Structures are given as structure tokens and as C-alpha cells.
Length: 397
Ligand code: FAD
Ligand code: DHB
Image 1 (cartoon, rainbow, N blue to C red):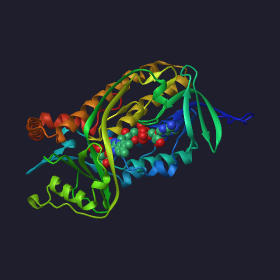
Image 2: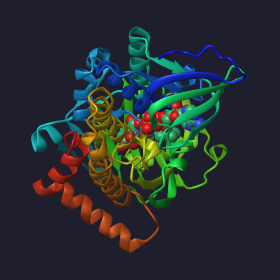
Image 3: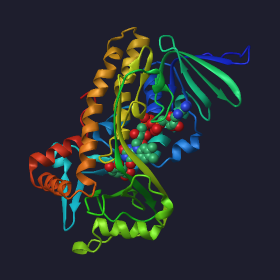
Image 4: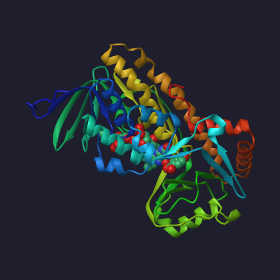
């Protein structure tokens, strides 16, 4: 990349791949491109501290871990992450363990998205790929011969590139220049998520159906618990003081049943996460590509969002290396169709887990949900289907 000297009011720059967004998709793409000898610049509207502290996903699929390891990003993950064999599925009076390793030969890892971001940030510090944080007014122009404009430190910038990749999440600007079809579904509920300074009350995650609403008992470390409650869409956090949150979690997760106890501790973070399914296709227009949440959003039940972002990038990085370093467009031409196969699989899985586990006040639906849960928990075929999707399909599926 040759930074321009800035003859006029706008400072010009050039790179091979301009990446919009320094979330997991953007930083991992930049890392993999550098390993393939392709130059990139990432522009990000938030500060690095903000990006590295946003509490979001926490479960990594088997193939996500494999990719991070093969990219040299797995050392801390293997040291500090926690490998889980499966999950518990529960409804009032019953708790069943699904052992993914027994069922499909692979498990998942608990490792927070904040930690993935930090590992990517440190790799970037060592590798020298340029990430421009705290930019304003990002805009993508001319998909046939693209450039990106933004302001940084009050100065207008122009970044010319062979290719632009929108890794700018669910509200970023890149999607606007990629025409296509949109499929979406909103759900009448949200998740209220909390982080608490208390040792997890369970060895593996508990997904709990309850007539009051879904609850999830997850974790981040031996001293930090992550918990979620189904709440109505549009819920105001002010209606949920800590005591009410703990009482609802205790009721839905079955505190006191068969001697199981939910440990309580100081809540250090809370937020409400709206839930929707969204797919935009194709994931390319001219020389502009989309990856991660910029192209698709899944409700969080089943923990697919971060893993899908990584899977997109695992396809896109070699495609762009072939396109730019070897002038071979075949993988780039296939990218959208190949990525969308997995996107739709995960869209279905996330919708299925969501609709199976969330109360919706319809007594007929409640019976169907319980019937599905009993089937998954008691039939090896049912359990294997859930396990195969949850632990994740191979990259390139
Ligand atoms: P993002 O991580 O969203 O990164 C996009 C980046 O683009 C951001 O850093 C953003 O600041 C930047 N950006 C946006 N606009 C611009 C612009 N104009 N110019 C420059 N940069 C821009 N998934 C799960 O599996 N489990 C969970 O529990 C879970 N919880 C979540 C909680 C929240 C509040 C949210 C929002 C998402 C959650 N997800 C969860 C989804 C998961 O975090 C995402 O799927 C994942 O972050 C996708 O990565 P990404 O890099 O595609 O997008
Ligand atoms: C977590 C989030 C999820 O969406 C999920 O299905 C499991 C765990 C978590 O944040 O720990």
C-alpha cells in the first residue's frame, strides 16, 4: 500500500483489498489475505477498545477453531478456552445431556468473541496490516471499479482498491451498493443477556424451555457466567433489576430441582438483543463482496452468527488471493453460491432452535415444542441432527 501525500483536501490511498469493518470477519479476512501475500486496509467506525470489549458470542464450532489454529491464532484459545463435548437440553422436570463428540465426533469451544477480537488485534500488531479505527462517513462507490471514502481525524480520505469487502455488520453501508434479494423474519421476543462475576453453575451449556420463556446458562471462564432470558421484543432494561433477572433465571433453569442450584453473583453487564433472521443474496456485486453479518443475521439460539462470519471469510480469503495474486477468478465467482449454502443451513438451524425453545403463548405450539425436545433427547437420529449442526459442518459444506 502506498499512502498518498495528500495534494488536495482529500488524502488518497491505495490497497488491493479495502475491508469495511474490524469485527471478526474483517480482521480475520485481513489476516488471511496477508498470509496469502495480498495487501489490505481495514476501516472501522468504532475505537479499537470498543471493538475488543463488545460482549457478544461465546461458542466456537469445531471448524472455526480449526481455522483459527491453522491461521496461527489458536494458542491462547487452546490455553484459556474450554472444550465442551455437548449441551444440556431441559424442560420442567427433565434435563438431558447431548454428547456431540459421541454423536458426530466433534464438540465446540467456549471462548468469547472479545477474546477472538483481541487475538486478531494482536496478530495484526505483529503482522502490520493497516486498520484505521474511529473513521466517520464511510461510503463505498462504483462496484465495477471501487473506492471507499471516509474521514479520519477530521480529514477526508479516499481509498482505492481492486476489491472492497463489506464486513460491516448488520447496519453497515456496503450492503447498499450490492443489489439483490432479501429474506427476513423478525421474532416477537428478544434476549436479555447478562454477564456475572460468579463461577458457572454447570459444566456445559443448558438450553432450557420453560412456559415463562427460554433461558440459557452459558459461561466465559471458571469465574464468569453468561446467562440469557427470553423477554418480549422492545423490553426496557429498566424493568429488569438484577433481583428480577436472577429470580426468572432460577425459575426457568430449575434451581432446586434434583439438588441443582443456580449460583448468583454481581452482574457486570446487561443488554437486550433483538432477534431476527436476515439473508441478502447474492453476496457479491462486481468487485464488492459481503461477508458475515453484513450479508446475513441469525437469531442467537444455536450460536451461529460468529461461526458463519468465520466460514464466509474462510471461503473468501483464498478466492481473493487467487483473483488478485494469480488472476484466477473461479473461486471468487463461486464465492456467493458456496457461502449461501452454509448460510441457509445455519439460517434454518437457528430458526429451528429458536422456534423449538421460545415460549409464544400458543398452547398448541407448546405441545409441539415439547414433543420435538423429547424426540431430540431420546432418539439418536434426532440428537445427531442437532449435534451435527451445532458442532458445525465442515468449512466448504
Ligand atoms: P460485526 O462483529 O458486527 O463487525 C462489523 C464491524 O463493522 C463492527 O466493528 C462495526 O463497528 C463496523 N462498522 C459498521 N458500520 C461501519 C461503517 N460505516 N464504517 C466502518 N465500519 C463500520 N452471535 C452468537 O453466535 N451468539 C451470541 O450470543 C451473540 N450475541 C450477540 C450480541 C449482540 C449485541 C450482537 C450485535 C451480535 C451478537 N451475535 C451473537 C452475533 C455475532 O456477534 C455476529 O454474528 C458477529 O459479530 C459477526 O461478525 P462480523 O465481523 O460479520 O460483524
Ligand atoms: C452463547 C450465545 C449463544 O447464542 C448460544 O447459543 C450459546 C452461548 C454465549 O454467549 O455464551
